[in-house]
Image (cartoon, rainbow, N blue to C red; front, side, top):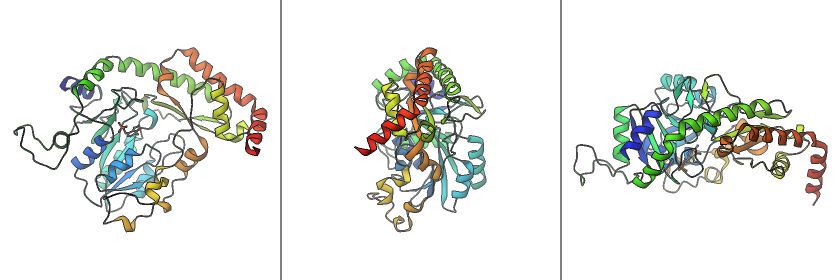
Amino acid sequence: MKEFEERFSELHGCRYGIGVVNGTVSLRIGLLAAGIRAGDEVIVPPYTFYSTASAVIESNAVPVFADIDLETFNLDPKAVEAAVTPRTRAIIAVHFAGQPADMDGLRAVARRHRLVLIEDAAHAHAALYKGRPAGSLGDMASFSFQSSKNLTSGEGGIITSNDDGLAEACRSIHNCGRIPTGLWYEHHVLAGNYRLGEFQAAVLNAQLTRLEAQTVTRDRSGRHLASMLSAIPGVHPQKRPGDCTRHSYHLFMLRLDGASFGAPRQAVIKALQAEGIHCSGGYAISLHQQPMFLNKSFGPYLEKVSRRLNYSRVHCPNSDRICREEGLWLEQSVFLGPKRDMEDIARAFAKVHDHAPALAAWARKQKRV
Ligand SMILES: Cc1ncc(COP(=O)(O)O)c(C=O)c1O
């Protein structure tokens, strides 16, 4: 375990790494370690996995949604700034698909308002921002090793940080409230057992050796595919700002303009699948529009503040548009393939686009039946 924690955190530019059971609990531990208390607000994007927000609720804090940028799919610092209130204590920045968020912009907002900045790096193993590793770009970061991830042990996660106090608090919270100088049966804070197992650490250690090389391959493939797809009308791959030195391509994501293909996204996806391209529309619902938020089904959490919350009023049009109409995902394993695989994928998109009239007729027929 110790060896894995040290190797992973070093690769991600950090002095500390705390292996935990998954990338959900890691976010919650991070929030608790940062001193987030009942009723505090934490700004999160609406275009992300459930856990980015559920971990906030399970810390008894209020998730506040700020929209993403329509082109990069990452948190927009201007939207974050507009969402800050006197109750805001933290920001969770997701490096969506493996492309680092605008960390300079977000750090500036965090500094101005004295907020803790946490990276949700579940997608971003070995990604680089201005040459610096994801995981070292905020006060602390959370990674996931769940089975779909670029580095996996079936389930698992890690918290990385360069902050002595935060790392110490995370280590205690993940280990039943123990402290390094205390006895095994001495517990200092309310906590749980969230430790990653030694077997998982061994599996991760073996894979870690090849992570760097695999990430370089994925990045090269992703760049190549993005440049080919950009030439097809109506296909808008995730915009890559110059500060993304290395994208980990946990997902290759794009916006698809159905009008250019003569048919809605779902029909285009079906046609691509018929060409052998494994793809999906990704998240279908913005997080704030999930039944849990609309019905405020938060269990024992947020009882005191629930009355003032109304998630049906949240306005995040970019996230909604991508969820409902335009988002399209390809998964990371594809990007370990050779250059000709990328060319096959681009050819399939071009073929479907060239047959837009036939696709439109097929989609119309489907609507009638
Ligand atoms: C952005 C993001 N954050 C957090 C998580 C949660 O990680 P885990 O499944 O390890 O709990 C995921 C998992 O898919 C994720 O995609």
